Every structure is written in C-alpha cells, then in structure tokens.
Length: 54
Image (cartoon, rainbow, N blue to C red):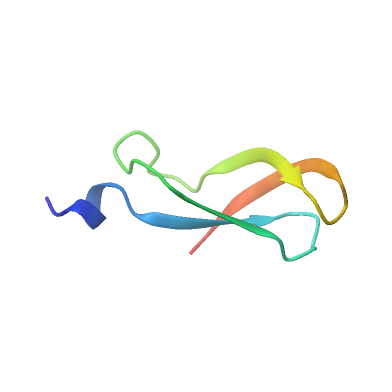
C-alpha cells in the first residue's frame, strides 16, 4: 500500500462552531470510522469534541 492510503491526513473540526481545526494523521486499519477527539479550542478557551471532516 502507498503511504497516503494507510495513514491519510485528516482535519479535525471543532464541534463548538468556531471553525477551529487541527490537522493530524490516522491509521485506517485501527480507526475505520470517523475519528472524534476531545481537544482544546483556543477561540472559546475550552476543551470540546473535534470530529473528523472529510
């Protein structure tokens, strides 16, 4: 498999509606569904859920 097929670059967008994003990579074999992480949103200065955007 090519490098980008197994570990694609994904955007994590804030669920708070601020438009803030994180960019990361994920392993498709371990996480085939959309990724959801609780991370810090500096615009509202709180930890919120960040969901994978395609």
